[in-house]
Length: 359
Image (tube, rainbow, N blue to C red; front, side, top):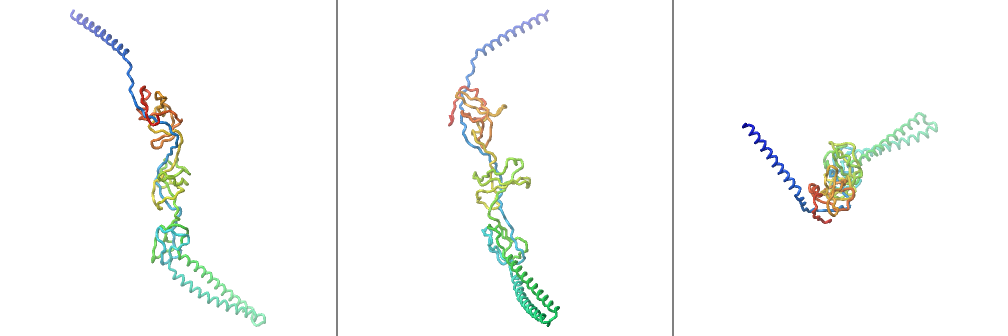
């Protein structure tokens, strides 16, 4: 009997609690239905407008200045350096004497050969007179034909020796000019490798020089090789200095090299390193600050103002450079500027204060 009473009490309590719970739930639902909608917050937004313009994408590179043409100058014949007439960094003209090799041995050989030639000229003159006399004797029967022919052979032999000596003298005098080291073209002296009193070996450089014209070599990694193309403009501190003239097909130390043809002189010496930039892309169109962009799953948007509220407008970013972008299509309306979180929330606000220089 006691158990039955407890069970009845428990069931009654459960029914009471359920009834009260339902009553409280209905009351809460009615309160929610009668509750007024929240007033949306006030917000201030800075705006801007598209500006017609051009953005340029420039890639910076470390470049190296080399001479357009350089040469190592040596003497063809060994000898002691008698004098060096130039200094490093000195400008010279084609044909200017740069250095002189001691010519004592050459001049001595030339004088000796000149004396030999004089003696040979005397021998030829004597052999010619003998031959002429023998012709007369032969005609009157006073000389055998064999002796006439022998005198003729002797004359021809002495003439051959004379001609050989004259040719050798000509060669010696020409070789003497090699002892005066001259500039092969207009240019600048780079290095003096030997000095007065040094022994200049044949073929060993004694002076290096260049033609004072410069080339710029740009090196870059293979992952951007498709961005560098011929005829792209090259800049130094935002000043155009030339264009990409040639792209080498072989790499050095894993880097690709391109040659820049200069259209403006660079006031830096050969061998200098400098930072240049190559104009790889440029786009003209609607230019906006990059803080106008909202990235969503559906694409890239800007928040366009229609006079009452902001709505997302899909755009395509054609180029980004620095803090600016070029987008398409062109937008005539005001565009909001803010961080992406704030841009995404703008459509939820009714009370918006629009400000900005382009308002």
